[in-house]
Image (tube, rainbow, N blue to C red):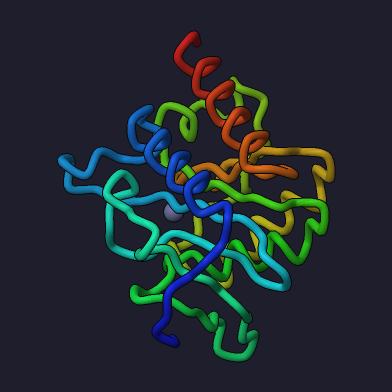
Amino acid sequence: MERGQVQHPLLDELLQWCHTFQLQGLVPDPASGKKGGNLSFRVGSGFITTPSGKPLDQLTREDLVRVTELDEASFRVHAVGRLPPTSEAFLHSYVYRERTETNAIFHGECALITENAHALGIPETERWQDYGTPALAYEVLKVLHKHPGTNCLVMKKHGELYLGKTMLEVGNTALAILAKARGL
Ligand SMILES: [Zn+2]
């Protein structure tokens, strides 16, 4: 972890989507004691993402973290910022590497969607894997290989990953799926 201030013209757009995710219930309400969800967009060979341990609607530009490199051997990422990156940063790394056309990844933890993946027609990982593990990343890659065109997948009993070319596209995908889930 290197201390420093992350600069990028799209930071405010990322923060807006963080607020929307919290407001819409796509991530757990911090008042419930649960936390989860993280959002990122691709920058060069890495990405800018949300930090660990702070509710999405309380984030400011200074909290955002730039992940510059994935260390495969230790399964850790190298990052610049004042807070550590989300504990699921390596998952974002793997998905960006797998999906070269993906420029943004939003991860929600919305029980309504996660529990209704089948009814919503969203591909799902075969089995639950612990948060922040290599096993979880491999489960996700299996789904991406099996469903090369999908822009959303569910990690069993955990949450959702939304993918796309722009943050607007990814955010709108998430909102459309949420609306569909509410209508079930
Ligand atoms: Zn998660």
